[in-house]
Image (cartoon, rainbow, N blue to C red; front, side):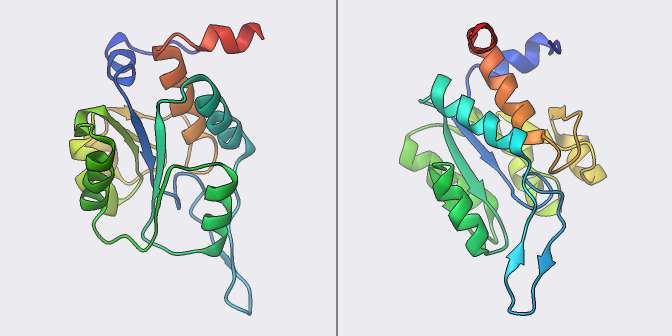
Length: 177
């Protein structure tokens, strides 16, 4: 089991919303465009299991996907994974996150956010727990409280789910089953 710093686990234990960017976090940021304009994204099954475990063992922690792009594939995947909040074509991620926080009656310190690029900086600066993939832009790395050991699309979301589960003392229950 990977050991995490006490300060990271302390921040993670207070999280009520896990929010993430899509391209560059949930996917590696590569997009295949078909002739008909349909986008194909490659998703990591470990992230999918992380989402399932989070929903099962920490049902009070909600999940938000906030992306600057719009894709039918994201809508389908969000519905399939029971994402609580989906915001597409987002130009102001902090404003969208504040709207979700207000709906949930939580503060920004109770939000974990995963982002990889300059559009995410405003949220990474404010979130109670800010995380970026190992291959994020340098500006994101400089302000994130935690840099994942994984590149975008390679298990970053899963790692953050595990951190939340460990911080809330659920991980051993999962492993023992």
